[in-house]
Length: 185
Image 1: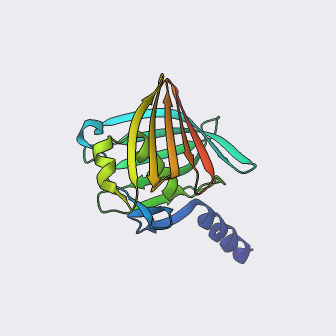
Image 2: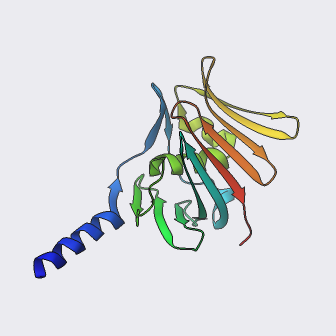
């Protein structure tokens, strides 16, 4: 009986904790990377809640997210089910490490990309330009929609469209989409 208990605890521990990852950047495409960074001072001490809808091929998941930025610009992101059950907790700190815990959610996207995408959506353009390697980022207005695009030469790698309470990020190289929808606290 003791051996069964040890196996159960080991399996549950493996499912709920993922070690820190020494990741500083994510690859957006071959030869194109995005260096993660702490939040700019204008976002310190802020928090917000959004509904995130992840889509990739035929898989999709909709989760609630709670993002908090502390006084040092460090990120904490928790994804929960609609019932409020924590499924995935992530953090990015100033020592350039990503920590992931309570990974009970099976998402179509790796946690590193979720944190990078949060930064690409929310960080100011000037900071993003310094974090992007091997491609260019631009922002422009198309009618009522503000658009950010990352391109290498003439190839569109990623597009972010801001439309009122909804922001849609489409990653063309990794073939996924995240829709960020504002919700009140």
